[in-house]
Length: 198
Image 1: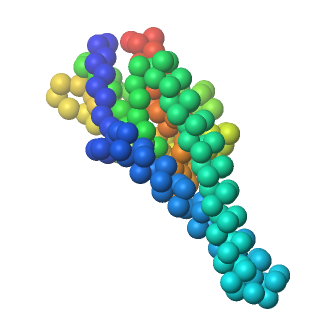
Image 2 (image 1 turned 90 degrees about the horizontal axis):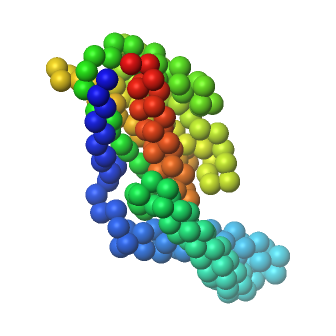
Image 3 (image 1 turned 120 degrees about the vertical axis):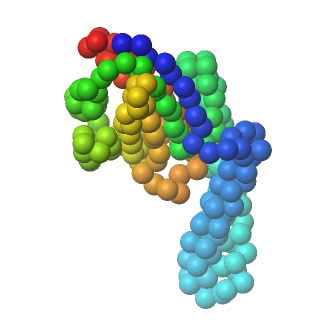
C-alpha cells in the first residue's frame, strides 16, 4: 500500500500576529474574570462599590499578568519542543491533517477503530458506512481533553483520511501543543498500522 501524506491547517492566519492576539485576549479574559469575581466579593464585604471596583482592578491586573505570562512561556516552550520533534509549528488549538492513501483499502475504517481502541481513546461514534469516526482523549495537565474526528472518503484514485483534533472546551486559548501532538502521533501510528496490515 502506498501512502502519501499531505498537511492542511485548520484556519488561515496562523502566525506570530495571531499568537500575539491570543495572548492579549488571554490577558483580557483573566483580568475581567478576576476583576468581577474579586470586585463583587470586596464590594459586598466592605459595603463599598468604589472599593470593590478598585480592589478588583488591582487584583485582576496582577493575576492576569502573572498567570497568563507563565502560561504563555510554558506554551511557547512546548511548541519549541514540538517543532524539534515533528518539524512543524502551529499556534492554533484546532488542528487538522490529511492522509491520502493510494490503493485499495476496504477494511480501513475497521482497522482505524481497532487501532484507536488499542491506543486508549474513548470512541463516541464509529459509523463505518458513513466513513466517520469520533473519539476523545482523556484529561491531562495540558487540557480538559480533546475531541478527535476522523473522516474517510473514497475516490477513484484512493482513500482520503481527514484527521482533526480540538479541545473539548471551546474557550481554550492555550493547549500547550496538545492537539498538534495528537494529530502528529495519530498520523504516524495510523500510517504504521496500515503499512503493517498491507
